[in-house]
Amino acid sequence: MDQHGRADGPNDPLHTPPASTPLADRNARTLDRRRFLAATGLTAAGAAWAATGLAGTARAATRATGAATGVTRRTSALRQAAAGTFAVPLDSVPHTRTWMAWPDSTAIYGRKLAGMQTDIARIANAIATYEPVYLLANSASVAAAKRACTNPNVTVIGTIPIDDCWMRDSGPVFRTNGAGGLDAVGLNFNGWGNKQTHARDALVAQRVAAYLGVGFTAAGLVSEGGAIETDGAGTLMATRSSIINSNRNPGMTQAQIEQAMCAAYGASEVIWFTGISGQDITDDHVDATSRFLSPGGGLVQTPNPADPADIWSNDEQQQYDTLSAATDAQGAAIAVTALESPDYNLIRATSVNFVDSYANYYVCNGAVISAQFGDSTADANAKSVLQSLFPGRAVVQLDIDNLGNQGGGIHCVTQPQPAP
Image (cartoon, rainbow, N blue to C red; front, side):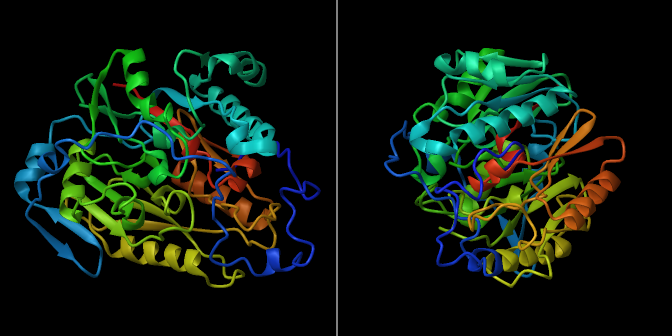
């Protein structure tokens, strides 16, 4: 995720590529271009999720797998069980508010912290033009967060402690039931497979639910919100690499994981992409590449022809091909919109770890908050595509390069609370 107001730049020694390879950084960005390098000294400390009873709650379901499409279609009994229950809606439904968090850890970000805070404030202020934002901050950082978030529609909450700012992953996933009900499910956040300290973030989901006074359920698997996309009508998509992974769900079969995902989200079908393991902290979250627009509609970020082929562009193409061949929970074909990546030679950022995801946009009431990276042609195209897909909303493009340098985007730091 990246945003605006980049504090670090080409003259920052922590940002500048080695002098021996100044051109290689721009002209040969290969498989590690999205790698999130953990800060030196980070531990995997945190509240470990107790997996008691996991196997019992994640029963294997009768299924038929389409090898060509990666679709797992569940039995009619499971579909009927999901109908009429709490389910996670699309981001584009009306919201009560957006939840975010204020980073303040020098252990995680070091000299990059100020830039991260600038980006978080810019995103919060932009969203708050269209809907309320509730921003979690550690008590010692409340005043700083309030100074930065100048939009009066941003409320800073200092009673729920946090480790980091990735609310899409650590925050509660809200569900509605179509009858005025709202509850939340927690995905048992474990620091992306114990890659980062997360003692506080592991408790954020249930603490936010308690703050709101809504029901809370712990899912039967370990995952993150950015790892699972839903169309709000029974269909999920995800990468195997980020969920069917021993760093999240050791000992669980794909069938057990699918059962737990569908139970948590109120869904009945999973479309799987292969994904990429071990090259970034998320193990290739789906929300950086593929998104649902509606039941029967999806968007996939596709490679820029000017960039050399690598594992990331191959992953994008594979996701596009798989989703284009898939059907949803109702058996309907999915119409897929391609959104071309920027030219890595033309963007502002120089880090090989930079995430250039247009697909990681956030839909709020009245607007789509999206990224721009400095490739004017690709940025304009992205805005045009998003405007055509969301005609009733303003498309607001932000420079979020600080977030991009840390491996994420706008969707990753936002968690919608849908209106019941």
